[in-house]
Length: 309
Length: 252
Ligand SMILES: Cc1cc2nc3c(=O)[nH]c(=O)nc-3n(C[C@H](O)[C@H](O)[C@H](O)COP(=O)(O)OP(=O)(O)OC[C@H]3O[C@@H](n4cnc5c(N)ncnc54)[C@H](O)[C@@H]3O)c2cc1C
Image (cartoon, rainbow over all chains, first blue to last red):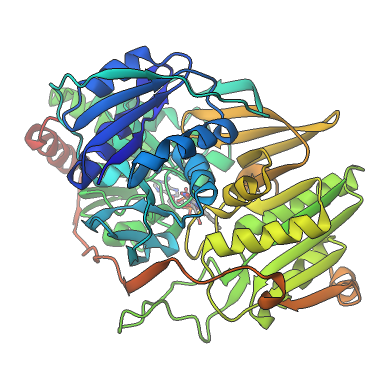
């Protein structure tokens, strides 16, 4: 039972999600990690260093799912599992790969019960579906946030492949959110802000607290729609799924679409004026009050306590 | 150009769903149903393209029970021209849905197919990508902006690192994200007019597609419940808790 894991590569580096997906699937069989892209050497070296990688396969070429999904289909004949993280790239690519293989994929997996039995959330995480997949080849996406990262210290061989990839699509612009905070989907601490922040300037209260805690920054859809935070900070059913050890939610009501993204959080702290807000009701710790009063004081107090990460 | 929009009838996104105690599924009887929100953005995008002179005809298709006529009527009231219901009472897998839609694409030969990026019931996020694979068309998923440029499209997508803009030739498949537009609420005269627009109903069997499920759903269960914690009285107390948490957190 061998596994083809497609790596997530971001600006030439291996994204943190890949090490987590690797640890999730390592029990299924030997894992070959496929690294795609024009600038894949550094990521390939990182993948080779992960415990659980049997081989790294490197294929150069433009990353466009219409082209590379056919290349992956051609490669998949030697594998029982074709897997990627459930990030925006895997979500875009894997259903295309599955349909080409005439396979029904199982996506957003949060638990692997057996090589053919998986758990995935539905209805924004308000129900969990256990599915059995007896197809000869399994096409899967895995939620990185639900698994721990594979250890490093391996030296798997790196092989080059020549896959012909022709795309009809042209990338003409990228708009990256500049950020020096940790990767949101895999961060250990996340500070999230809601529409109550009122403006992009005020949202810096959230950013300052996050910086103090070495945390990633999250936002609600309402805050993103209002232009207070970039779209890639959105947490929830349609944004990123997070599972930090600590989530601090500031001025966030806790709509079920937002809760969908934070169900894996170990501990939730809520700061809200409304003691009846759904998020306050399920938080481990809540402080009721005005965020504009609380958050600057909290940041200063943590500074005073010498908190550093 | 001709635009095909695929839409799904789902449990309304404001409903707090209930998992049946016997693990057989989510209770849908007596529950408010409506058009999947993402599909609404897809319909709105089609209507806006048409209003801007880019859409000669908008055909909407839904696959589901007879009651899915409702969401087709909603789309017709929003401005689509013609509807098709592929009728089935079975809950089909996304692969079967994509195969049925591929047949519709064969028949209708649209220049653009618009879909919602995911349905809020099964949260699959599959069908647009699968349809693109089955029809050999380029895809732009999670769209937050669609522009017609020359003979093709420029589509801005929301992705994990921010946004990116793709240029793609037609025919193509595009799936809608929530920031693509603000769907309109049709006024009463439009709702009345929708009833006189053509709406064909055809059984699934007519399409000659094998829709047998590939997966077995063993159980559907509620997620573990979170229990309410405590309320602290002061910022100092909260800071103390956070400081302790951080110092005991396992280094990753
Ligand atoms: C199909 C669909 C998908 C969606 N996907 C997502 C998603 O992925 N992620 C997401 O987040 N949302 C999503 N939403 C939107 C979601 O339903 C809510 O609208 C949104 O999460 C609300 O954001 P909010 O908590 O910032 O705003 P609100 O619900 O308006 O809450 C603001 C909160 O701030 C509190 N507050 C106000 N002033 C202060 C103050 N001075 N100090 C402290 N607290 C204060 C209020 O008491 C309130 O609890 C989706 C919706 C739909 C229909």
